[in-house]
Length: 265
Image 1 (tube, rainbow, N blue to C red):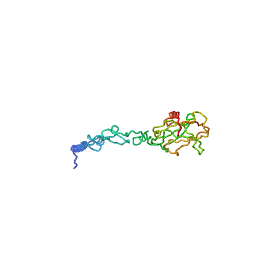
Image 2 (image 1 turned 90 degrees about the vertical axis):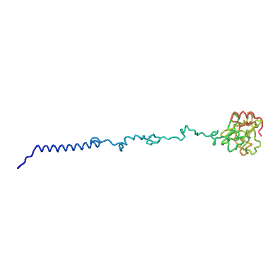
Image 3 (image 1 turned 135 degrees about the horizontal axis):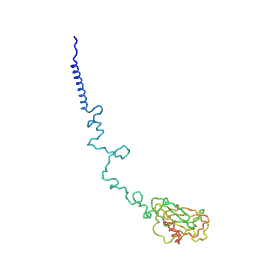
Image 4 (image 1 turned 90 degrees about the horizontal axis):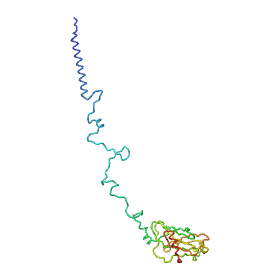
C-alpha cells in the first residue's frame, strides 16, 4: 500500500526549519554588533589602549619641552641661574684691578720719571743713531728699547777727531750750555731723547782731518768702552761746534744747543 505524503505538513515543517535558521543567523549578527562593530567598520579602541595613547596624551601630562639650544633634533629644558640673574646682569666683573696701562700687575711703577732718576741707563737697553739735521747740525737720537725707564746725563759727551790717528788727545770738544744742574734726563721705555750738535755754527773754515764723531751717551754712568763712533763725511768743515742738552723733541734740542757757551770738559 503506498502512502501519499501530506503536502501541508511538509510545507509547515520546512517553514519552521527556515525560521529557526533565520533566527540563529540574526542572533549571531546581534552578538557581533554588541561586541563592538561590524566587518565593514572596525570598533573604536578602548580607552588606555596602545593606539589611543599614541594619538592623545593623558589629561594629567604636559607635552615635553622641545626648545632647541644646540644641534637640530636635540631638546634641552631651560636652565635657571643659581644667583637669580643672568651672567650679564650679575654682580661679577671681568675688569682687572689696578691703574696700570697694560703692564702686568696693574701698575707701571718702573716706567716713571721718579724711577728713572734712581736707575741709570745701561748701554744694553739703548740704541744710538746720528743723522743729519739742518745745515751743519747733527741729531743724536737715543732710544730706550727696554721695558723700564732709566736716567741719562743731561747731555752726551762728544769729541770730534781723526779715526785713523792713535792720538785722540787733540780731538775737538764742543761748547755746552753753562749752569748745568738738576736731575738726570728721564727716558721712559719706548721713548727717545734728542741732543743736537752744530759742527760749524759760524760757517767758518774748519779744522782739517776730522772724519769721526765719538759719542758717549751718559758719561757719568757709563764706561769709555760704551762710546759709539760715527763717521763724518770727508770735507766737512768743523769749527766752534756747539752741543745742547737732551730734550724730548729735535726743536727743543736745537734751542738748547744755541745756548751753548762753555767748553765741555
